[in-house]
Image 1 (cartoon, rainbow, N blue to C red):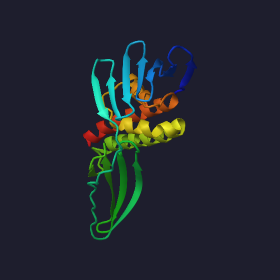
Image 2: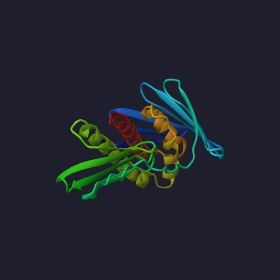
Image 3: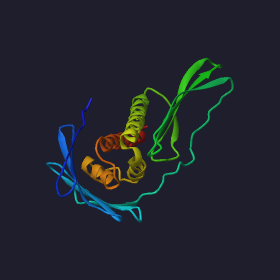
Image 4: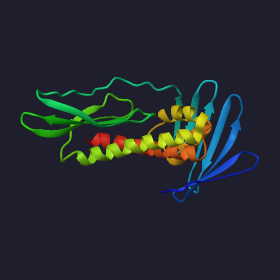
Length: 225
């Protein structure tokens, strides 16, 4: 289990340091007034900066590769599902698993189908990512590995989100809104900078990075099914 060490010390700007998987992430609050909050995150190899406009809800993120991302934070909404219902005659359907994360609304649902004629049992999975309509698939030997990995990713997302909510308290809602709009290719320093720009720092930011990383895993395995 990774230990997250957080140190705070005084300087001209507030600076904190997070150690995660043998890498130290130092971030500074470069500006924080009634209009703008600006954060810079540095490691031994990269620097990322995020600026959040408190009035318009827009943010600008400069990652370590020089890429610029701009977006506006807005509440996410749940879309309608594309889940299939397969109910042959003489079939009993039992839900055995259902998990939905709170940021991207990725879902993993497993139903057991017990057929009477002829007698057999099959599992139908409904999976979705990025608030999409998703898809239903029958479990088979060719896809059960990817389905299990997708399930594990969604479980990690949900677990880290719950832990982050406890760690961040009042800053959690803004952090979730920011992360939901983030590009899926960002590195950890860029994500930490983005979260810091909306007031989410420390262990809570690390936990949300882990949720973001698991979200990218879910996208990968979703595409393989």
